[in-house]
Length: 418
Ligand code: EPU
Image 1: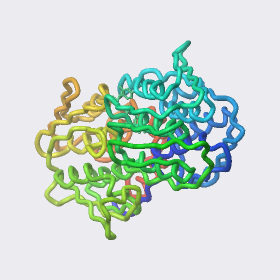
Image 2 (image 1 turned 180 degrees about the vertical axis):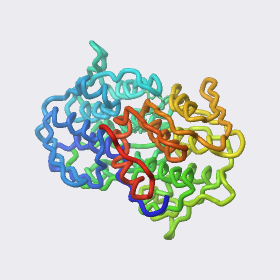
Image 3 (image 1 turned 180 degrees about the horizontal axis):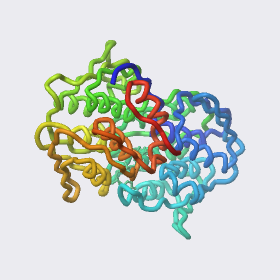
Image 4 (image 1 turned 60 degrees about the horizontal axis):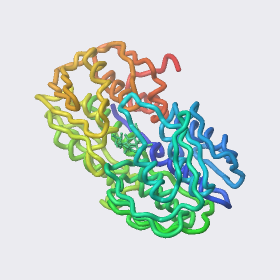
């Protein structure tokens, strides 16, 4: 694979940013660099159902939530996208009421939302679960000292969005540190919020009376960039990623370096500019791929959203690698499909032992979730013969034009059915 690829806006940043527009009593928000994804369509439908006015054009959303009157997130939408839970905090904060379907289990794990609910209760909300819905009420939320029992990304985002309109100061301890949380804090501040400490484990938010719409630019998607880094490595490519948020990818690039895939920044690069995309060259070393161990962790550790992709790469490395998945209890569904392609992988609990093989062989495979589908496509790129992946709709939730971007880099890939 050779050539250049441009990374789209980050799905996991765009979703909370769209939810945050619900906090604006006045004005219109303009969100740029919005990726063209199924999950974005879902959150737009969700907000429109509440009464928001949304105009969409070429990577941009203009959103006015002044007329929102229906504080509901129906099961039909939440079941297709768990991140719909992100409307719970903003609705309670601005309207003092919310009726949000409780997300069910998920292909990668149970994924409860107890920490979101507990935090909102600590801020004074009354919450009950009835007929599959989370029903919340609050007069005005009150600032609170909240300590997360485990690191939760959307939980941190939900409580940040609740706290910006609460009375008094909220302190979130053991908060998630993902770059997407910084992107959200930057936007909330532009709307008029008072927040400090985003990107660290302690976020302090002082509530204000009212927020207004604002403009923002979604950061480039670090997982999409990481997936293209692995694609270059697995296909012995030499590619340029035009806008990789390199500073946000440290744990991945360190591992790729050890495996034998070099990432070279093409401009001066600052470790603290987590939201900025820069051009990088990705090239596999001539000496081939080395095995190593990987353990998924909350940011700044190795992202669980890159686990399937790196497993595919390690399936073709010299020697044995051990991959531990510590975030989700069932995120190894791709293993069984990779085995069908000739990979030598054994799973025990939350650990996968990957013994590198010389070649993978093309086979019909089935995607089980978003990142698994990326891992399987990468396997197909490296495999002998043809790989046909079904349930491609999982891919469309989080990768925009993935097959076109790969094709432009020289991959032999096409979509045969939606
Ligand atoms: N957890 C609880 N209780 C809670 C919340 C979380 O027990 O109230 C547990 C989860 O079950 C999980 C762990 O905490 O075991 C971490 O989950 P987290 O809440 O951080 O995940 P999330 O916020 O639901 C986001 C991303 C995921 C990504 C994870 C981990 C968004 C919209 N989603 O999910 O992205 O894998 O963080 O980094 O930001 C993807 O893009 O493919 C994807 C799944």
